Length: 286
Image (cartoon, rainbow, N blue to C red; front, side, top):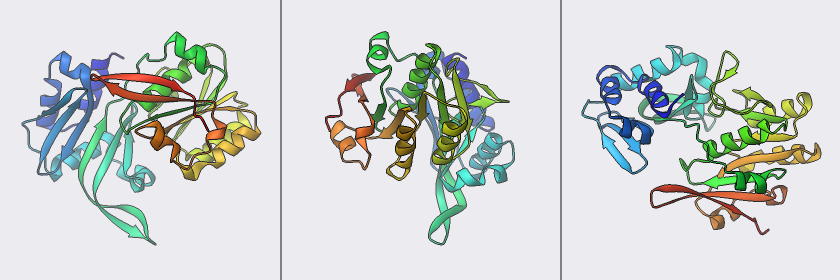
């Protein structure tokens, strides 16, 4: 799919007037779109690489609810688990982040009393791993970092594609359905010819299953947290290289995270300079 096709499919999740306004945007705007954000009573914005564009159509509880129904095909009960984590994933790999009023059970989020805002992240299948970067990263365990929304998932997807297409067996943990965006078992994004995908399963359980059953040479996971360190231990024991992403705005911030950096050979930092994404391959130095 082209970038504008991907944007148009995200716009189709919106109701009525919002959908028409989103689809009416010129091609150069749709090409730059990264997120659609709706806030009840406050309006809707299109987040672009270089700024933000406000829509004229109003946003209320009805528009929020209809967007959720369109994203879940009127089956909110089928996404209760991800709702507790503050998001849902629509078909095609569109993640909807949610804000509103939570209710708790035993001190932990158990669901939403009401949803007052949402962001629709527009995924991109971008060819961003150059031949030079691939030569440095191939055969290594790599930790990819950037601030939220910085392009980690996009880079990971393309690195998986390139390594896989060279003949390496990759097992891809797609907990949120964003990396491969399976539809009837077929990835909607190109993740390579030799990649096996496990979608909709928590990372630790998915990694254990894939390591046991698919004999990967590389295990790829998105948004690794300090609480998921057993992933590192199990993949190391199996002799499997690891590709992972983590939130961090700088190398200094990254090194303050509770991550076992000894498991990784290299890091890739993603930054914005002059409105463009830049990629820096780095030694972790620890």
